[in-house]
Amino acid sequence: MKTFSEIQQIVNDELKKIDFSKAPRGLYEPIEYELGVGGKRLRPSFALFTCQLFSGDYAAAVHPAVALEVFHNYTLMHDDIMDKADKRRNKPTVHKVWNENTAILSGDAMMGMAYQLLAQCDEKVFKSVFDIFSETAMGVFEGQQYDMNFEVRSNVSIDEYMTMIRLKTAVLLAASFKIGAVCGGASHEDAEALYNFGINVGLSFQLCDDLLDVYGDTAKFGKNIGGDICDNKKTYLYIKALQLADGSADEELLRRWFRVEEFDKNRKIAEVTEAYNRLNVKKDTEDEMERLYGEAGKALDSSSLSDEQKSSLMQLAGQLISRDA
Image (tube, rainbow, N blue to C red):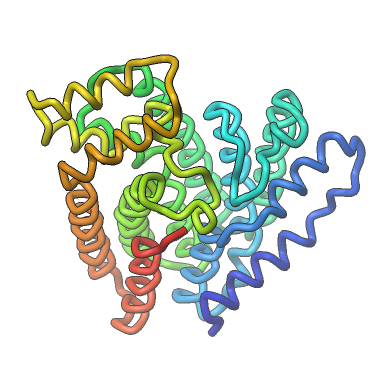
């Protein structure tokens, strides 16, 4: 049995096997750059690790797992364009190194590559894996649209936000666990249990990301701190802060900053963060992350995995929501 860190190295080795030397270079070079800037390779690693738990080997999930990583990076490349992000994992984003048109087209090519990789999985599970992957892709696109809609809305509820991040972030993590389970020969019930486990882990993972955008270290986080605040993202922290500040000066401060079109970035980040501190939304967010972690455990308990196997997955989930990058 491979450890999770060994699984991560296997994923990196598989990614290096992809041939980027094909013409036209202007299409493939940005893809090679995007996939080469690093990352923890969590989604493909979860797929391989879960496959191993059910079958004793990870090999059956290799191609779908790499497909998940290529698809994930495709979404990041396009998200960076839409968010006008300058950095990703402490390196310039593709559209900054090249240009937006190149990033759009290379991203589209990554989507095609993901399906080419997916098609190489065992024909016995191909239909199930293909359906999970395609449904997940549509969910991610729907989540991105909700995220864009929320940027121009003055009021977004917690429930609406959780629906958005479930689609934009959690479904891809959940699909990684489910695809790994399916490739490993898991029953329908076990595959669903792993999916529900992944949904709750994914929700908590995104709330951690929200926290890091405000309270993280740029060097460790790999992105500029305060990006969500500058982009008027209706994160869990912002929505919760509005609830807690109802009718107060802090509510007016937050709404004003998220309404103005021209502003000093540093001042906006500082004043919004100070309001968050006064309202103690950091603790509220951490409490919700812990609750979701508990829900993930309940989902996992419904599976037929051994206590030791469940413990290994819960440990991985715990590391995700206590990370600093």
